[in-house]
Image (cartoon, rainbow, N blue to C red; front, top):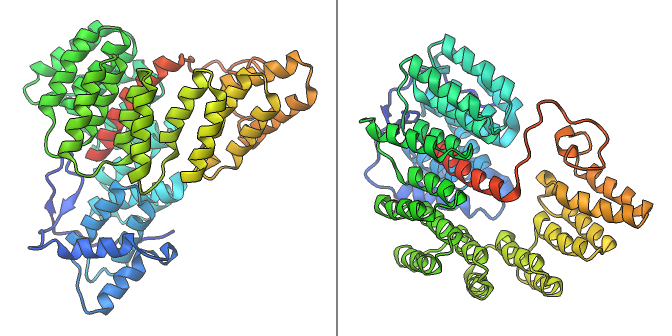
Length: 500
C-alpha cells in the first residue's frame, strides 16, 4: 500500500464545508464527464481490474478529466461505501503529479480511505509517509477519526494531546470526534470533561458539540440536564438546532415514556427537512413506530414514496421495522413482499425483521418456512441463523441450535459476527441440565470459531465463565436501553462523519 502525494502546495479554493476539510477547484461547465466515468467504474464487468484501468482507458481515448471530476467521483464512491475504488482513483492521481496537485485535504481523504481499506496500521504508515507541507490539522484530524472509528482509545487520546501541542485542536472538530468515542464507550463523564475543557479554553461549541452533549445527557437518564443543554444551545446565537437535535431528544423522551414531548420533537423534525434528504424520514418512521402511532407511520411512508421515486432498502427496513415494533405483522409482510418484488439487491436484514417476529412470538415452524423462502429469493447472513437458533433454544432443540450457529459462522461475511452472550448462556444451561457434555464442548467450539474465548469482557457475560470480571468492565445494559442509546449515537456519529 503506497500512495505518495506530491509535495507541491496546492492552489485551490475551499469547499463550503462546515469544517473546511475539503479543498475544491473550479467546477467545470458540464457534469457529463464525471458521471460517465463513474458509470464505467461502477459497471465494470471485472471488478478486479480496478478504477485505474478505466481511467487509463479514458485517457487513451484522448479525453481529459479534471481534478474536480475525479474528486466528485471519489465523493460518490465514498457515499456508497466503495472505499477501495475511491482509493484507487487517488492513487492514480498521485502517480500523475504533473497533472494533479494534491492538497492536505486530499491527503486527509486518502488517509481515511486507507484506514478503511488497509486498517489502522496502513493509515499510520500513510501518515508517516506524508511530506511536511501535507501534515496539518486536516491530516491529523483524519488520523484521529480513524483511531476513533477503530476505538483505539489510547492512541486517540495521545494524538489529541499532540494536536493540542501543535495548535491543531483550537476548534471543535477534534473534541467532537473524541466525544463520539467516549459516548460509544458509555463514558459520559469524559464527554462532560471535554465540553468543560472547550469552555475553559474558549473553543466554541458547534452544532455537533451540542448534539453530542444532548445525547450524552439523555443517555444518562437525566431529561432535565438534556433539556438544559438544549436551552443553552438555543441561547447560542451561532448555532441553530437541526433535525438531528430533535430526533436525538425524541429518542430519549420515548425511552422515558414522555410521548407528548416526543411528538412535539417529531413535528419539529418535519419542518426542518431540507432538500432531498431521505434520512430524517427513516428516523420519523422509527420514532412514530416506537410510540405506536400507526397512522403517522403510514402518513410518513406515503409522503416518502411521493417525494422519492426510488425507494432504497434502508427505507423499506425503516418502515417494516416500525410496523414490526407495533406488532402489525400483516402490514410488515405486505411491505416485505412489495420490496422483494422490486428489489435489485436482496438485503437479509429485511427478511430478518419478519423472521425475528415469528421467533419471538413462538411461530418456529412459520419461521422455518419463511427462511426457506428467504434463501430461495435472496440470501442469509449470520444473524439470520442466530435468530432461528433462538427459536430452537426456546424449544430445547440443542442439536438444531448448534447447527444454526455453525451455519452462522460459515456464512459469507461472518468475520465480524459474534453470538449473543444471552443465547450462548441459555444453550449451555440446557446442556448442563441434560448432562450433555458433547454439546457443551460444541458450544465452546462455537465460541472458539467466533474468536471470543480470549475476550474477557465478552466471556464475563457468560455465567459459566470462571475468570473474574475486569475491574474496568463496562456496565451491561438491557437490550432495549442499548438499542435506544445506540440509535441516538449512530445518528450523531454518521452526521459528524458526513461533515468531515
